[in-house]
Image (cartoon, rainbow, N blue to C red; front, side, top):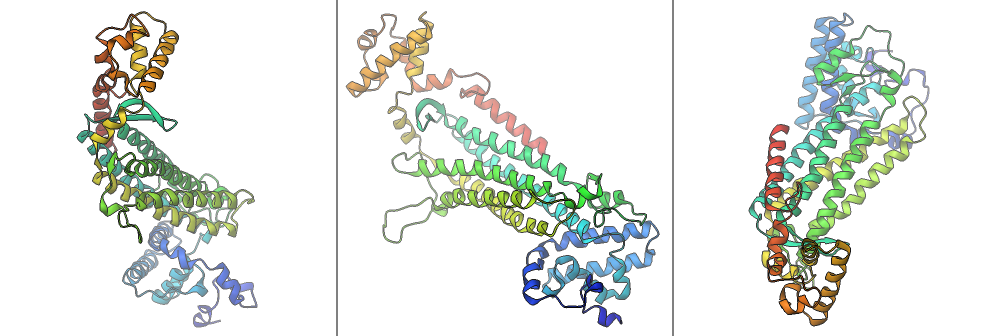
Length: 467
């Protein structure tokens, strides 16, 4: 068979006598989405060609011809001139076919010593690793937005909630810094995940390794991988790196969704803690007064979509025997979708947090609605020598009385408060002040001003060390 005839058959079709059924070809094709891996496929193939030449499997001239052809293909793809063919199934076969068109028979030597099994694992690991580093950069910017707002609002106090009920007063900066901790853990997970992704599988071939004297480490080093595979069967069938990345993305979205919920609540006029920027809201088609937090709602909704991608791949992988199975082709679209969702969500949230306007007046008004200084009264009584459980009971009675009278604890007279304990004196009113309640909590990690400042400094230092 001539080369001209060969290039119109499947590259794996030597033992087949029938063409693939059109519907089967449409069903099994992946080039419609895995073409996104073209840059990684070209980079991996160039490294493979160099390694083949270094090992004496190709001549230096052959390797350079292949590398030149691959670079030309990269330019064709980037300028839109490359013709993607579905009958060539995937990104790998499309590029190899075009390479042979450009450089002739030497193009057919590129696949020496490798399989699409280790090739796709290599490409996808490169892609996932690259995107994880992008997530890291975007998360850092989100944390910086929170830090900027925390520094601007150090003196603002708002109700802290448990069970979505008023609990104790906290510094707004402290509240914002809690999200910094969530997203800093996400960065830790991203970095830890990226380390496990950074393992080169090239050289594992289909599943058993290869008879050619390959040097997997040279490919790994050129492509920036931290290590190479330890077992060829695991190398081609491992998709833990995708699953773990999908989990990390799901955890990021969980944190974003919690934040979205608070933005939605705080922007409601019943709370009014924030003014939502027009650029991150929409209106109603019928109610002219509406300002809807649609961006936060959509982000909260997209969290379920990301969870679904994780569950899809967990389900795909749970019953697969060693080694590679075609089911694994279904690993890419979930990650592509999650990557797009996570990346856009983190970036948009960073911009939205930066643009938020906080309303200290509304927060202060809310402080007076839930007896948030009741714990201060109980602690005050403990300071007078009353056991805490008894102090708790006394304070509960005082709150019940104030509630019946329609007033705050700090609005009660000394005489009224002394009805519940004669140990209460004029100094109680300084203790009941919300600023005092916040200021006294200087335990490391607490909401006191010095503690908040320490948190800010620590996060700033941590971000610099990440760079």
